[in-house]
Every structure is written in C-alpha cells, then in structure tokens.
Amino acid sequence: MDFSYSEEQQLFSDSLRRLFSDAFPSDARRKLAEAGETLSPTLWAHYAELGLFGLPFAEADGGFGGSMSDILISCMEFGRALAVDPFAASAVVAGHVLAATEPSELRDMVLAGVIGGETRVAAAFLEPQSRYNLADVATCAEPDGDGSRLSGSKAVVPGGDHADQFIVSARVSGEQRDRDGLGLFLVSADASGVDVRGYPLADGRGAAEVELDNTLATGLQLAGRDVLALVEAASDRGAVAICGEAIGALEVINDLTQEYLRTREQFGRPIGTFQALQHRAVDMVLEYEHAKSLCFAASVACDGGDATARARMVSAAKTYIGTRGRKIATEAVQLHGGIGVTAEYDLGDAVKRVMVADMLYGDADHHLERFGAIAADPAAGGLAVWSA
Image (cartoon, rainbow, N blue to C red; front, side, top):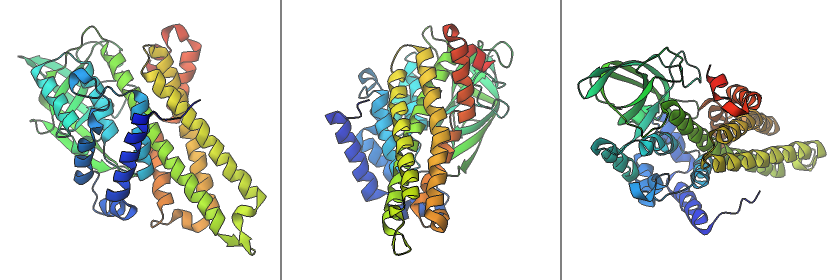
C-alpha cells in the first residue's frame, strides 16, 4: 500500500509537527498532566489558526472537504506528540453528526463554532449499561413544545469535560435495545438538569459522565437517514481517528526502543547488537507497519458508501491495533528494563496512549466480535447481529 502523502497532506503534517515541537514539548505535557488539565487553550487556538477544525467538513459548510485519510494523518501527529486535546471527539465524531443533520439556524451556528474553534461538542452515545452497544439506550426523550425533555445517564464521553454542547442519543420509541426508535438531540452543557462530571483518562485525555434530569434539548433532524446508522458511522470515524493516535504513539515507542538498544551497553557493547533483542525489535516494527496499513485501509473505507465494508475494515484495524499495539508496548517496556516505567521518560506516556486507545470506540474484543458477525452475515453487514 502506498503511504506517500500528497503535497497538501505533507504540508499539513509538517505544520502540526512543528506546532507540537514548539508549543508542546514533553515538559509542557507533564505540567499539563500535573495540573489535572485535559486541554491546552494555547494549542486549541493554534489548531483554529491552522484550519484543523475545518478539515472534516465540506466546503459548503465552511470547511476544507478533507478525507478520512487526511484526518488520520493529522491524528497520527497528535499521537506522536501525545497531545490530549479532544480534536477527534469534537470535530471528527460529533462534527460528523452535525454535518449530516438538516440545516437549521442552531445547527449552522454550532457547526460554524466548531470549525472556528470557538465551540467544543462531544458525542454522548454510550451509557453505563451499554458497554459498546450503541443501540442500548435507556435515556428517554419526551416531547415538550418545540423541543424535548431528556432524562438518563451517558458514560465515558470523550472530550465531555470541556464540551460546550453535547449531541445525545435518546430513545423516542421502542424497547431499550431496539435499533429503531432513537433520536439525536443537542444539549447545552450549562442547561438546567445537566450534571457533567469530568475526569482525566489514564493517558491524560479528558472524558465525562453526563447526567440528564428533565433537560430541555433540541432535536436534530435527519434527511431520510437512520439515526443508529449515523451514530455507528460517526463512532467508526472516531475509531479510525483514535487508531491514528495509537499509530503515532507506536512510532514514538519504536523510536525510543531502537535508540535505547543503540546506546545501552551490557558486557562491553550495545545491547542492540545481541541477535535475540534485534529479532524482538524487528517484530515490533513489522507489527507497526501492518497496523498502519490497516488504519489507512479503514480510513478509505470510511469515505466509501458501503456501511458493511466500513464496519469490517474499522473492526479489523481496531482489533489489530488493540492486540498488537499492546504487544509492542509491553515488548518496549521489557526491552527498556526499569527505565521503561519511570514517570520522567516519554515511553510510559506513549504506552498509556496505546492502552487507552484500545478502550475508546470499542476495544479489541468488541471489534473482533463485530468482525465475526459481519463475516457470518455479510448481507446484513453483521450490524444487527452485533447490536443484538
């Protein structure tokens, strides 16, 4: 597979890499973590200046019409820098839902705010009981005039701790795990009845638990699209983005490991000269290259119109990175010895990024089950089986 960047992709990648090198060195990241902060306002402003937030959106909405591969390349730079800002959660996942809804004054205003960097939106799809089943929604919506009243709980909302708006899936009809009967609603973070409990994840990124108690919300209208299908498509795009961050972190892990093997001496020579360790290092690089290939294949599938092909490739990439990424990370720690688990060394932060990436938007076990369901029932895309 050809991984060569286009001229535009290379320019954008280089711009992000320079930004992180200048404005987000390791000591800045650690200070942010020590302060318990999960977002850098300075970096967020720079992303807006670069036009990063407009990348996922069509030109008609004020964006740049970037492909999912363009987004993946950007997320790889986030992973290399171990940046914690919720670009993927806001612009990629929640932004995809916003862009797919019918134009309205509120929708257009929020979307313009996302593209300009003034508004952060988080997608609240999962609930405490749902695991990764996006159809398992107990949050209910009751009509109230021109809006609706929402009550329920949403769990592990990426970027929710700094969100200004939430896109919430809620049940308007049917049973709790039905694929039909869902609606999407826009909820202001400061609305009455909203309780947001933010917290940092293990790798420094932020998430939140969101409680809704008779909260007034605005329904988002879709033009003939199935709500759950849109939620699944947005979640899959989030999965690819988070895989991109994992790929960037794995590159850091491999680079640090190879450098350590070249410089650490034992028995009078660098330990990288020992054949057994060379074999392990080569295996790490091969696993990384395979994972990168799957990520780009999944990004291409996300831009296609076939939901089954998209789900299949995303689950393949997420399963592979979840299992092989963990293997690369543990191998790196073992090859480093004691220094591999010290807080002052970048390796530990990169390992955490890979581990947390496995858990977001479906872990390896979940995506392996979905991949198997698709293989068992390709005509239905396996999605009905997976969500049952």
